[in-house]
Image 1 (cartoon, one colour):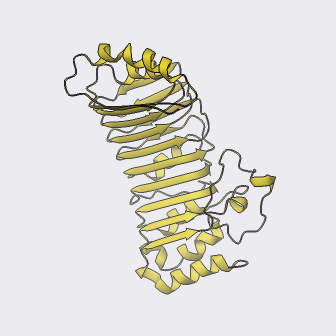
Image 2 (cartoon, one colour; image 1 turned 60 degrees about the vertical axis):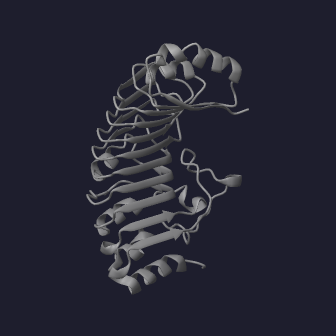
Image 3 (cartoon, rainbow, N blue to C red; image 1 turned 180 degrees about the horizontal axis):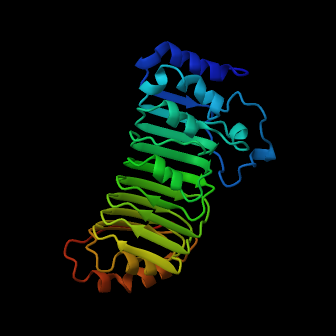
Length: 299
């Protein structure tokens, strides 16, 4: 589809289906962006056209302002990175204004503005993937999506000292694309947490209900608060700092399933001996319900 017909096509289809439309998927690209280098694309070229810029305000309004907008329950949009990487898009505020009954929202490959973002009390599932987000501390996300139960932040850039404050979220996958100074998660009902980061100076996990934690981290920073892991039962760690992480996350907790993964870049034999065998029985000698599922070495 050439020119602006892509925008028009989505609007026409939404108009025809009207209030019968429950799910909308718009995929303009199969690739992925680089949210921390928003002006860079392959060969350092970007596309000034907007025919595939499907998270722009005009593109979203084309279908959101129809009778389908208030009826939609699920929306998924993947933008074309060469067109979306260098200009902000208004997809979030437009969707929040017109799609009042939306339950699930997934946005990919875009630079998203949060100016004018409204509260979406019905939204329970949110996925932002390869997104540059103009919400440095995630305060607007916390404010406008208070009823989230499933949250995926995968490669979301533009963050500085982000904090999650969500009382109802139960499943959270967070792959941090850059290296913010601090990360904080305050989620009293969170059960399943997957966190991938580099080495934040401050890491706070105020998550008393978490039973499954999958953590990928280079090394622990100087300040780590993980007192809120009283319910932890299943633990997976991928790191070159296994010794410190085992002592921090597994000591004095009734871990039932332990999965350790050693990165390719380290001496697996030495690290395994130092981190596991020297600490294994001292940490777990009183645990009768422990199952070590696997200790893998990626070489």
